[in-house]
Length: 283
Ligand code: 13P
Ligand code: ZN
Ligand code: NA
Image (cartoon, rainbow, N blue to C red; front, side, top):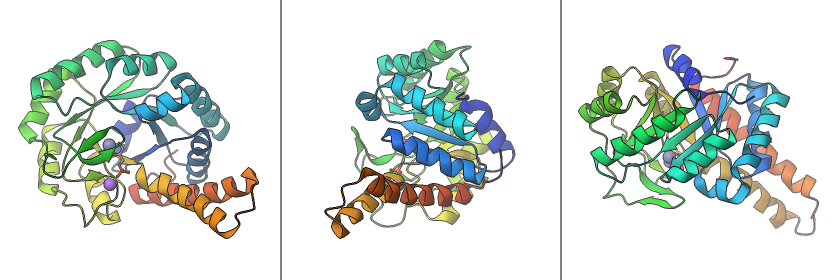
């Protein structure tokens, strides 16, 4: 079965390691992530954006993720990433997602509170985790585009008030990372993370985890950012492997051949990220 990410992340936070939430964009990649997690004996979170829900279907995703989690015997949560649409959240919850993000970060504080409360009511007593975002994470995550000048770090006092008002069990405060691959190095505000972490008991979420230096990620995890989101590096790794296959052997059209190279690249990336957050052997 798929499990709620709330206890998974609380345990990780209490025991000082992180859980990677990998964005998956295809059914194959669900199997690749879970095979790698099984080899590492690591709990893991699969997440999909709204775009992937639209392309693959929420019920299909739940069925395939459940089958893979049962086959590999890996504690697995399934999360809906960056959703701005209450109807899609309802659809995902009904289909069997065990965690959802309501991303109302582009709205003012009061409206963010209102939308998050609405999702808290929807999921009450269902064992579904809820994640909300404060501040604005820069970069591009499908339809959500935030320019460098519009990116905004979360205010610690507001984080405290937000959690008190909504009761949300996981919070993603913007702290200087961005979606996608950086031009330079990310400017992570560790002092701010520490302040937020001191005010809150709940696990925090690190967005924009691709291309963040390993030691920076480890510092974030140590400060209570128990969920680390990785999308771009994973999809790039296996897409580049497929491109490589066709560059070198344009006439080799056997899907088992090019998907095997894709799988190897995906698994290597998943394993390196699991090692980075310290969740290896935590099953
Ligand atoms: P990256 O694009 O840096 O992998 O960010 C992933 C993310 O935050 C998904 O929500
Ligand atoms: Zn994100
Ligand atoms: Na990133």
